[in-house]
Length: 383
Ligand code: ADP
Ligand code: MG
Image (cartoon, rainbow, N blue to C red; front, side, top):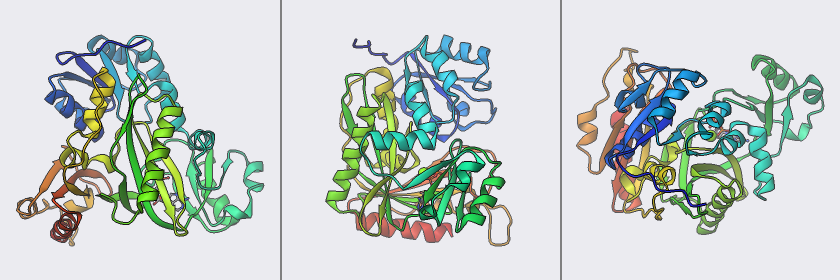
């Protein structure tokens, strides 16, 4: 069945009030939609800019009822929205992505099972959810990275473990919750691909993104990727489209990949939403990942985005709000904005903390070299 389009003037709902929700709200508003955000935090970045902010917990029945009453269709900006809440919403309103697809991405074990079903290589791994399974883990997975199966993000809920003693200690420290132990792979590169799929099964995607992480948190994204070969990029793009199709995905999905030092492409994880590594598309492409989220949610035509500028995105973490003496400061925005092609995005978070994502800066230019040169200057100014 072809769902009818939801047209501008309608209200779109979002589960979650973080920066991804904020940028979705901004994209929806620029197309003439009204917006409603459900998030318990009074000062949530998306709640602050939405037409309606429903301050309620994600499982609060009254809150969910209010969101449904307000909204013609509902999306999510964060993968840890309880799947049950999406099931409730999905019974009454179009919801994209669906609860099923979100549930796969919420659990690292089921995510890896999906990679296997889709024929996409991932890191050798084992599920650790009992002391017996811990004891039975193969030595070939060490040194490894122990990750909580659920609720991890930005490197949180992870520990690098060199040997069995460290593994046991790390599992204790993580509260013996279900975890996945992955072999620590020698990485040459990290890539990601944002895809969007609609109810007709059409799939479009953004160009392959090259990502640099520091301490488990995304620091820099470059598009086009300076280091991945065209063959690797084609492989990553095909794998992401395959996953979207196999999941019968509705909405925007991001797949993260590793490239190992011996040149193999390995899937890392999926996010059932726009992704930090796709933020450059607001300024560097004619259709952003948030525009794609609006279009897929509303059943509007899905067009392939075209990158019109080379882009480098720098994440702005809370650390930049503190000087070398530890005193709070304002980063030198006028100097940064004096550089050509700089686009500042701040998320309206009321307090800075080290490691907290406060915003991002995208540098666009006619060539990747020029974008990189300006991004280096911006990074030097930011310190
Ligand atoms: P998160 O949900 O926090 O993004 P990831 O699984 O993507 O968790 O891990 C964060 C980062 O840690 C990755 O981007 C990568 O830099 C590093 N990492 C994760 N798993 C591995 C691995 N198996 N081998 C090597 N590095 C890894
Ligand atoms: Mg990740």
